[in-house]
Image 1 (cartoon, rainbow, N blue to C red):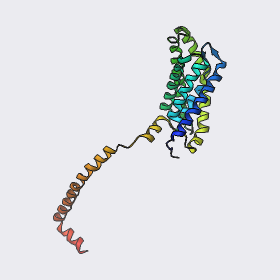
Image 2: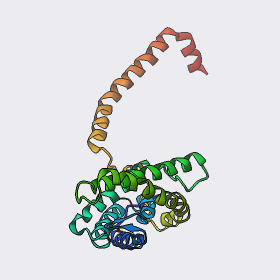
Image 3: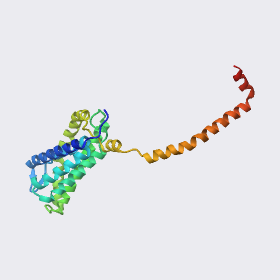
Image 4: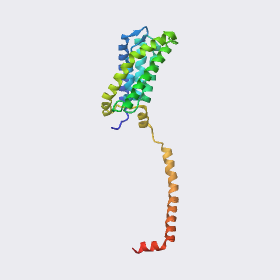
Length: 239
């Protein structure tokens, strides 16, 4: 089914819903926590599926939800903006690298690629936020951040590797039917790239001047054949 461009109203509703879901998942993550830092990161589930479902609208909603979660849930105030950066890093890696229909078909290579990309984006986002918190706000020193990195990554890894492929496979076909499916970044760019009209007109203009010349050469070639083979031409004409 061909994917259609989403209306402004639909985009706004997607932003609102993704923001609310992200905030709720962030709040639920607070069950396993350190002071000002959540070890369990349930929004990683959303960051694994929103990119191919909602594109830019999902990114905006996730970043807003990340800020609210950092500011309200972790108690960081305006420094919750760093959680928005985490959302951006993980979201964009997934959106750009996840293969088309990665979990929707039975291609094992695509599925393995999806799992590797999800693990990579999780590691990148976790590494960023931990080392960010060694600078501003200085919650940990570098040694502590390295110690926390390993359990944080492995607590969240099974969650993302199990739930995201299952959700993509189950929900994506329905979103395609409803006209809400965006696809990966390559699909989105192909659908939104405008044709190069100036180049197209230039090619037409060049063709207009080239065609008469081509026809002239073709006619000259036929005349030459006629002169070179008068007997054959006469026989053909008689028939």
